[in-house]
Image (cartoon, rainbow, N blue to C red):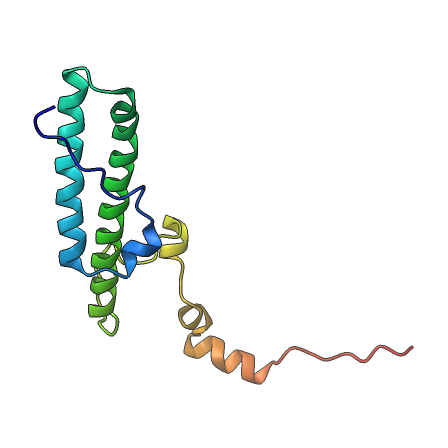
Amino acid sequence: PGHECKPTMVKVKAYELRSKGRDDLIRQLDELKTELQQLRVAKVTGGAASKLSKIKVVRKSIARVLTVINQNKKDAVREAYKDKVHIPLDIRTKKTRALRRKLTYKQSEKMTLKAKTKSQHFPLRKYAVKA
């Protein structure tokens, strides 16, 4: 009644958010949060059914904005650590624990001196099978 909230954006799209800058995203997040606050007040005071159904849309929109903000943050960190030797744990590839501990191809191909000389002196024999 007193402070009618203006109907803001209809369901924000993630691809539209990606083109925006960080400040715009934070501003939009604040707007959405204030709108949610007003909708919750309307819910308590017995607002219209349209407002009650809008709560879910606004909550999901907030989640979308936060997701895009966090993705941008993670991309920036990835870019910063691109050429470094040690990378933060949350940036490293997940895979499985066993795969992360597996030897690299280079490590698995390494041989001891004895194994090297043995393979040189006694190579695998080649047999020609007559047809």
